[in-house]
Length: 174
Image 1: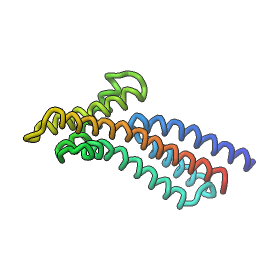
Image 2 (image 1 turned 135 degrees about the horizontal axis):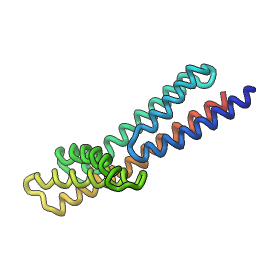
Image 3 (image 1 turned 45 degrees about the vertical axis):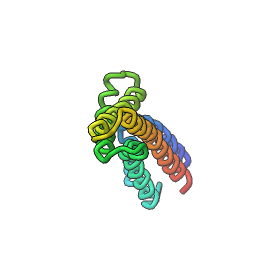
């Protein structure tokens, strides 16, 4: 019976993890969903994980959020953007991701494209308001923000994958 439960838990985390990775790609809290299922399993079946495993999972989820939140800003900053452009890259990425989900109705693609376009466009517009900046300089900052925001989705999905692997292995190997 114990083997059946172990296999069922591994299958559960593979399924939840796959859904969490997909959610992370579109900017939703997939890592938190994976971690929540891990915590629920730990409460129902306390011998499944150690709380250290859950703690490491929490650190991975926090790392995913930090990576997602800051990547557009880092891209704008590396391209020489002003503080205003950096903050607008973050705001534009959030708004663009939401808008892209509805404007480009292709799952995952619309959200990622919207976030990248929103981050880049807002950073570029903000940079154009800085005295002495040329359109080319503003475009470079916008491009940096867009690339950073696109990479954010990849990073967040990577964190979700790491969390899935962690909890799946921990469920199988006591």
